[in-house]
Image 1 (cartoon, one colour):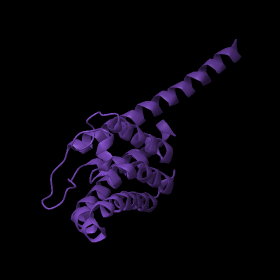
Image 2 (spheres, one colour):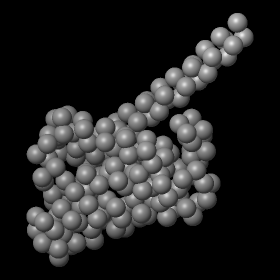
Image 3 (cartoon, helix red, strand yellow):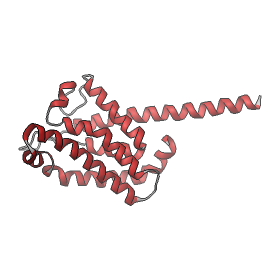
Length: 189
């Protein structure tokens, strides 16, 4: 009887962790969608200021590499399926617009943050991971914008106007992650 109860308890803990992970993945996909809707046009550029980057970074910092990337894949999947989760709508064709490269880089950025930060409590490792995450997003966005408008225009329109704003997002993500990371790793790890 004791073995049966122990086996049941183990299954319940595993199911509980799986459920928490699924909720976290969907929750960060929804948070990223919310962040996309906080969109402020920046004059002279087709790329709006959004809070997406903040939630992409946090997904990797709090969920880890695999679950963070999964949350961004769920977000992209919802948008590709036509749900209006991107800054100005949804649908597969949206990925061919000026922000498509940034969107496609989101899972890689989240994975990069989680990979560099790992399970370490080091603020330095976390900060490096967050900075790398932004660099991955910029690389994806810059590559696609360069295809659409040339390298100089891509840099001028898709990176330079956002450097200061994204530095603020990295700092905010660092503050939030430093406070919540231990508990998040415990819940989802």
